[in-house]
Image (cartoon, rainbow, N blue to C red; front, side):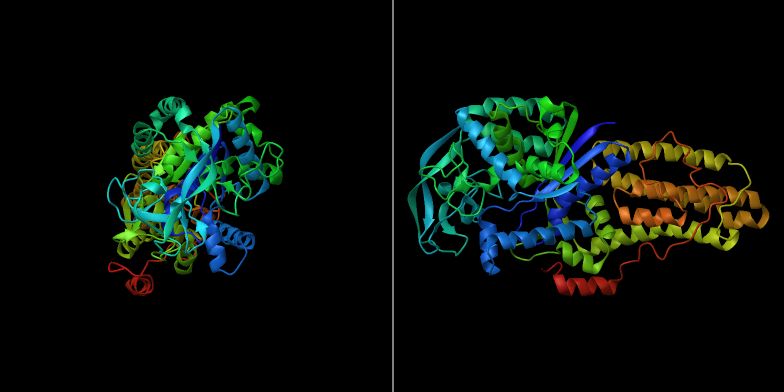
Length: 569
């Protein structure tokens, strides 16, 4: 079995995440981690809170807290939400913890020793009204490339270009809205990406053949436009401190910290060290090629806005160090999940957030919908109407109905015991062949990280179960041929056990409940060569669950639309 390292983009610390964040990174990473664990692979799924930068300082100030206290509380809030959605992180670390601090300072030191970092006196935007230098993303204005009027100083969300705040037309402070800005001198460290541009391109050429078109196109877009030297320090108090060779304050750069986009990706390594501290594992064997990581397959999951940093900036850091660090093998990028006609927005409170979603329905309803109808190859829009229709059809009518029908029939006609007798016939032979083909297709879609297609392949198998039950009609066979009815019941109950196993990556809690109806606790991933129609032995007791998936009623949709908004909101 393989060793597989999985990372999902780090959720930022400033508040609970919305469903768009969940759908574009953490959830698909979890679904795939569960699939690979189910196959028996050694999986390490790493995530952490991204805690540095101006947004954390501002959010803490708004909450009336010092930034450390704020981040301590918000880390727990986000961990609680992740646990409630059954996100199976092996570690959920913090970029403000000591391992990331030490590693960030290490990379900066090594890069500088290799001539890839230099000090520059920079001209940066200072907000007189805010009495502070403004980090890139806290300067907004009109993009010089596409004329988008709300471009940030680090990147335009409309055209995707990486920017410098000095490029913006009519800039203003997004902290206060003030246009009372001036340019002042300040000293900063720059990562000389221009010096490693060819090496980064060669790395992308070698690694990206298996990446999906979205990730490849974004990577080459930035490479073709030409890498620029990037400032990697900021005039902030909260972050990884910039230090000199002796570990003390660096002369001329006292009080400065590293840019959050320099230290945040390094936290993937830092969080793995946190995992090792907690578990006794060996973090270096996952990250150092000279210490065993040469056999690791590394897969990253992220939204499309993070691709440039993970295909250019972070590789420039890793490759530029000249040290034998593991770099990503497969990068899975997702598009936007939109809220009706606009974007989900943490800052604007638009859309449904993770904690609010769980007030409405259990996590598995959301896990299924966001995977089966998520923004995988294009932007997708969340609407209450679609959520209601697909949930009712997929989960209540297809999966839940099948499980309840066959288990309740066994309870009422066979005293809740799997019956003996009879031999499988042509109908079961056809079902076995169809299941084998369907399971092979489902497994292939999972291997390819095609999540929407995997969900539809799983649903197709559930449909097979319903079609078989309808055609075999054990309620009719029982009137004249008890042995024939027994065969159909055993087959149907084995399908329940099978469906629990293929459902587990998508909906782990529901999978356990489905398996429990037939006393099946094995939720490992099934192989197409297995005897899929004899998974539940004769004599086994069964017991129907309460309703597995309740239908979403029109009155609920109306209530949720009034609370959160809908087509007009």
